[in-house]
Amino acid sequence: MFKNKSIEEFIDALSSKQPVPSGGGASALAGTMGTALASMVGNLTLGKKRYADVQEDIIILQQKVSVLTEELMELIDKDAEVFLPLSKAYSLPSTTDEEKEYKDKVMEEALNTACSVPVSIMEKSYEMLLLLGEYAEKGSRIAISDVAVSAVMLRAAITGASVNVYINTKAMRDRNRAEQLNSHCDDIMEKGKKLADEIFERVEKNLR
Image (tube, rainbow, N blue to C red; front, side):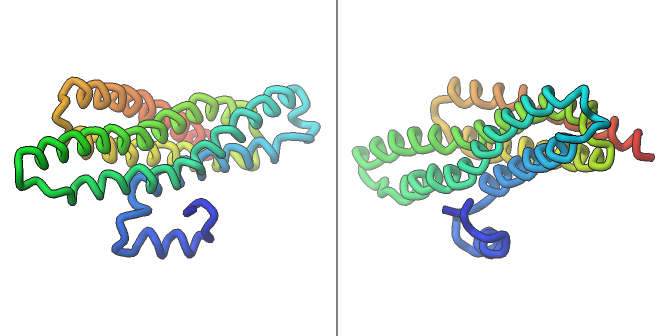
């Protein structure tokens, strides 16, 4: 359960030669930091007279972000879980035709499963970006820079998770399924990077 480890323990595990946690878990953590920063901005806005007219909006945002934070935290461990069957599949024997056929079948299933978590990381991070603009507009001005940092973290989560999809789809024999996954990720990548950059630049412009 990597999500329950201290930061130091997680970094030690991430830097070790063990296969998990790896880039997928790191991407999920980046996404979680992005949601947490947005939540912090919300908490600094709630209860402030200066922002009395947006209190209800922030409360609704905070509820949505709380769910996304928990989901992304769960994906830190999920990424490790789905990698293990794939690592075992790679080591299956493939000497005879029967062994090759069985390995191909298991590999295809494991590759599909391994793609599921980074795809979810991308989807959840983009979902957070769709909410982040409202924090930039209505959140406490003393924490507006943290909205920009949140955008950077969410952008990193999306781009980082994408390559964990692409490395698996490249090995798939079912090219239709592979292209379907690639296309979905390409779409999130394009929209996510654009939105993250727009939010970052908007905040940066107001700070300089």
